[in-house]
Length: 112
Length: 111
Image (cartoon, rainbow over all chains, first blue to last red; front, top):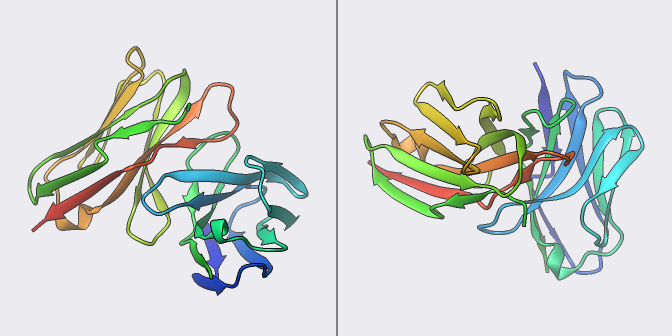
């Protein structure tokens, strides 16, 4: 069966520090991969999605970036975090098209 | 905004009662999906209804879709305390390559 791993579960970082969140998927090949951010009490904001290795689409201009170095690995990065980057970050995978997406358990990021 | 909008934002009921949540959207869709999120966790897919379908059932869940009104409803029958969660609709909009999520309905089921 397919599984998705996302870590760390919680992270506290100072303003201006770098960020690297990792997401890996097991049990499927060539998945579509997604990074979302969820502010408290709000819906999901799509940040990046990828349909293949090295293919990244950005939905919202910001100081975050994403990379897909391997088929089932998706990384969210920042060189210098801002206070506004605080939130709950979710990774998800899906098959081609807008079929159901399967989510990781998220990373709670707090910027001090 | 093209995203689905859930209504109500919050719903509080007693165990055994039915819970109904609604989702409205603005443009044509390929399908509409409902997800559940327990506090502090990721979303879990519940049900997908295609644009040519009008009703779907899964256990205690019943989803309807009215494309003429651009709306969908999620009914949870005989609610349990364990149904307490936030529920989101997500639309696969025609011409868009990703899902668009609403802001969710927070459901509280009291014992």
